[in-house]
Length: 312
Ligand SMILES: NC(=O)c1ccc[n+]([C@@H]2O[C@H](COP(=O)([O-])OP(=O)(O)OC[C@H]3O[C@@H](n4cnc5c(N)ncnc54)[C@H](OP(=O)(O)O)[C@@H]3O)[C@@H](O)[C@H]2O)c1
Image (tube, rainbow, N blue to C red; front, side, top):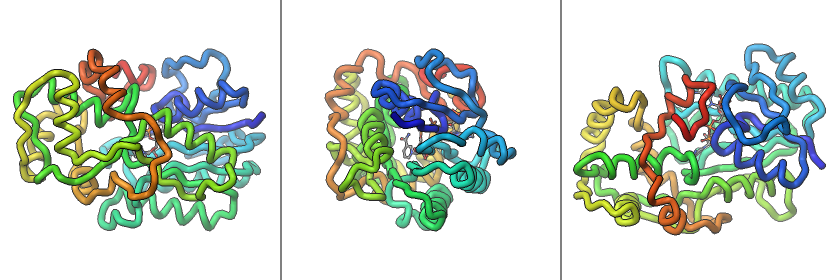
């Protein structure tokens, strides 16, 4: 039995990882900004603050843990948070894990960070991968491209737009690839990394078994939820402008310039064999009645800290 600390075990991927670890009898602690967020784990998870500004408290939260799984990051720059802050906070977390004697760190990065020059999200992630390597603690790096499954944002919000808008705009020709991975497949890979499974690479591309051109993904999702919409190519600038106009309607930042650029550069797709098995199209068919009924808000998740992600 291992004792595993997970940042954000009441969040999206963190909760899927916690679920697998608890099911096999591991002890789970979480370090979280949202200790009062509803979760399905009852009293089984020990809860600690994600106290980036109090390193001794961070060390105390991690002492006695065999493994730290880090999911913490910020999705974009906002008046409440920044990439610089996220890099600094993560460096403190990694240092605290080392000081606490944690034997292994499983760190979540992003697919192809070395190809994201000029994009602060990717540059921050690459920097942290290098810091982790220099830190000398046994580790694995998980590199997801995009995740889907209960409570996801991208696939859910594509279907939300399909349900609520008369047309769907794809950036440019929409011909760039992505291969979303189911969040439970991602959690299973994380558990293999926690166990340092022999033969598993240290740096793991985490993408799904189906590759889609972006336009094709939108087309398939529209068919699955049974709506017919024109799917039109728009310039990235116009697409960003329209999404900014819609932001106040949903109280969120729907997408950023950097995210559009990463998508169009093909950074959400990897040529490595997929370690996931769940087919997005099969999953979406099973979920078609509920998929995209409610907009999933990233900013909402950050400000409503005592509400479950699926309700925001
Ligand atoms: N989801 C995807 O499709 C996807 C794709 C590529 C890479 N990733 C990477 O996978 C990791 C986990 O992603 P996820 O979607 O599972 O994340 P998440 O559950 O939304 O958040 C993970 C953790 O980070 C904290 N957090 C997130 N944004 C924050 C902010 N702005 N300020 C302060 N704390 C914040 C959360 O806080 P609380 O403790 O308050 O919950 C939670 O502890 C991240 O490193 C992300 O970069 C995800």
